Length: 214
Image (cartoon, rainbow, N blue to C red; front, side, top):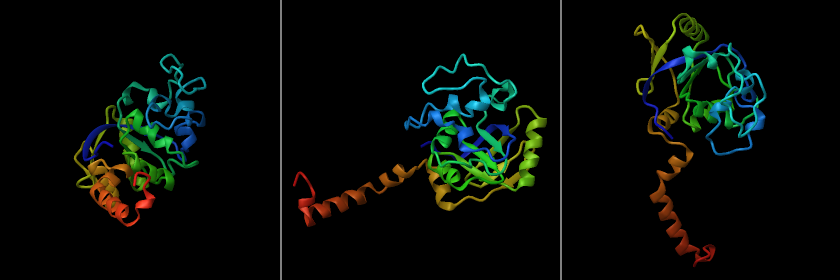
């Protein structure tokens, strides 16, 4: 999992409340569990005029020109600005997979659905909860200024506007540690590899019948 420490990135606005996980990645794409390849189908039903199918070529599909991610001014955005209750609906982990595969590292919203919020951290996305009035102000700024960027500094726990104004944010200390060090659940486990091996060696001596090669 890639580390997130400090980044300055373009912001894309998703000006809709209650965006559910089926909108983020529709159900027909849930067959794969590879974590990658979902980016082209992020927000598929809103992004394209036709119905997408797994493993299909998206390069020639007709685009909805009014959808935010199809607008040239938001190409390359790594910060998604959203409204309340983002990620509601089913608990599919494919939703953060699709966001990450598209290129988003940070999602800012007044609130998130709990399971989606937790899944983001497990997959290298930083979901940040800010006061609704602050989020409103950011939406206004993004709409008013093409190429609007934010600096997200996880070490100092601040978002920095182009003007230099700072917005502090709260984040759980353990989750902050994982993002700063690029640790998912597997990475955390591997960090205790020596302890695991020591325990296995001890168990092999105590109960050799449990091991098929004993």
